Length: 384
Image 1 (cartoon, rainbow, N blue to C red):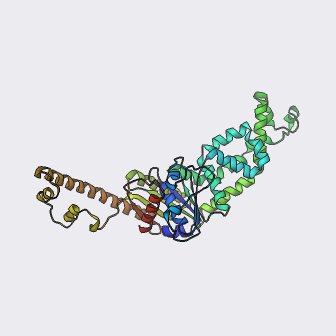
Image 2 (cartoon, rainbow, N blue to C red; image 1 turned 60 degrees about the vertical axis):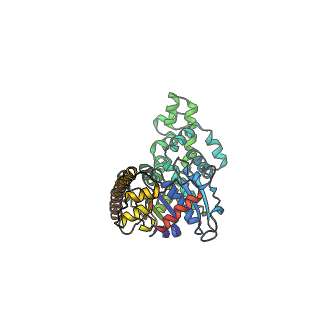
Image 3 (cartoon, rainbow, N blue to C red; image 1 turned 135 degrees about the vertical axis):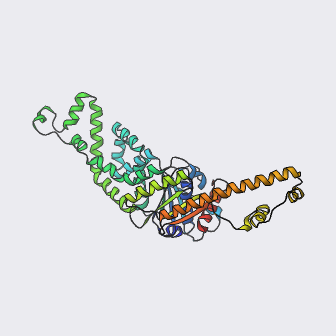
C-alpha cells in the first residue's frame, strides 16, 4: 500500500528506525497529514526527547493527549479531522493504568505501597511495556481513527513488539503465587494460619512490614492477571493485523542502512513486514531549471569563463578563476556523494521489495520546528 493509502485507511502506524533519522518528525508529519485529511488522529511518542511538542506548537506534552490547534495552516483538505499528541511518561502512565484497572480505592492503597513503588520504577525503565499498555488504551477507546506511534531507536523498538507478554509471565510465575498462597503441608504448623510460607520465612529474616506490603501488593496484582493477559493478546493481535502498518524511517548513511537491515530481519522473524519506508535526507534529483545560472551553463556543457564572473561580480581575474575551480571541485564531490546516495536508495528499495513503497524526502535547509515547517514536510511526503 502507498503511504497515502496508509494515512487514509490504517488504524495504527508504527514508525520504526535508527536514532537521529527524523523519526519523530516523520511520525508527526504523518499524523498531521491524516488530521487534515479528515481523520481523528493521535500521535504518541515514547521517545524521551521533546521535539514533538516543539514541532506541533504544544507547550507541554505528557501522558494526557493535548489538542493541537491547526487553524494557522488554513482550510484542511477534508473537514472533521483533529490532531492530538501525547508523550509517554512511564511512572505516571503506569499509575494511570493501575487506577483504571484496580479502581480508585485500591489504587489509593497500592500507590503508598513500597513494593509497588519499587515495581513501578523498575517497569518504568522499560518504556516498551508502558508503551504497549498506553497504545492499547489509545486504540481501544474509539476516540481516534488513527494512532501514530513514534518508537525509540532500533533495539527499543523491537522490545515494544516483545513487551506485551512480559508482565503476564511475571504474574504466571510460581514464585509470585507461592508468595501469597497459604502455607500447606507438614511445615504449616510452624507458620501462622493463612500466611504464605515464603512470606513467613522472609519475615523471620527481614522486615515483616515490608514482607506484608509485598504480599498485599501481589494480592492486588494477581486478580488483574487475566486483564493484563487479555490486553497483551489484544495488542499482539493489533500489531499483526491488516489495520496496523509499520513504516521504516532511515537515511542513506551506511550506519542507518545497517541498522535498518537489522530491523528488517528482526521484524520478519516476528511475523511483521514493512508497509512503507521513508528515506529521509535523501538525494532527490531536480530538473535543470532549478539550478543557478552558473551550474545551469555547466550542466548544458558550456564553460563559464572567468571573464564573465569578473564582469558580473567585479572580482579580480585571479580570484574569479579560484572561485570557478572551487565550484567545479564542489560540484564533483556533490555528484559523487549523490551517486552513492542513489546506489544506497536502490539497494534499500530492492531489499524492501516492490510491495513496500519507498518515499524519498530531500534534506531540508532548516529544522522542522513548527506547524508550518511540518506542513511543508507533509507536502514533500505527498509529492514523493
